[in-house]
Image 1 (cartoon, rainbow, N blue to C red):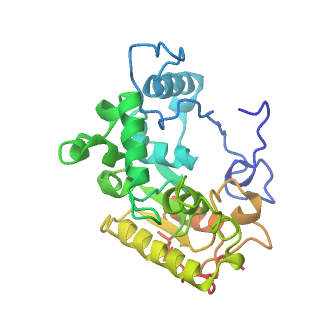
Image 2 (spheres, rainbow, N blue to C red; image 1 turned 180 degrees about the vertical axis):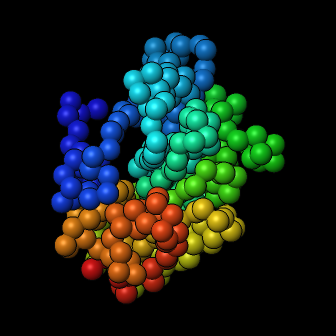
Length: 295
């Protein structure tokens, strides 16, 4: 909750660094609820005094933005990074429903495709983590019924179980070896007490051959979870294979002469062509070290 937030990448107001969206109105919604804006608990936590009401926060902010003029927009993007990317996945269709059918609405998740994966010890740490989040926040009522009717609510926080139901045009930006997922899902807290993985999870060039093999296995599992979404006529994606987390608001990775390219397009150019229906852009790069998006 820094007092100032620098608008870079897709949020930049400089046409040199953000040629397609520099003159759009943009709003950065502070993330403060801890449950991707799904919480809705009436009671106040007696131990902390906290309110778990993220869904109400999201609703109130959207109502305010509509009143401020978003209602008259012609083109709108809902996007987010990390937990904000998950928020975008969970709220995309409901967000579109707030606007007239004449408005062009699309959604972008940046580093929000968290996968259901065991850690290096074979435990389902992150699955239990999501179970705890959903329970604490009372999130079940705000998760897609198409998922909660078949799976326990905690599993409906994983995009692989809900994203296929999204009807609004959607774009995924993600690394198949996302650095946050490697450090928190694969090498989960408590799984590496000797710090054997510490260097590898921050600098892929420091990984041993055996560690690289594990990372490549994680990449394949990520792609399996992603490709399991099935076909879509409006879904685009930019999947690279480098230890990075959040790229659309990272100027060096979004756009510029030295920005990485995947099939000769920067992320900004891929998003531009997808948003204006010029090219869906559906590309998955090869694994490290041949990843063309990381050079």
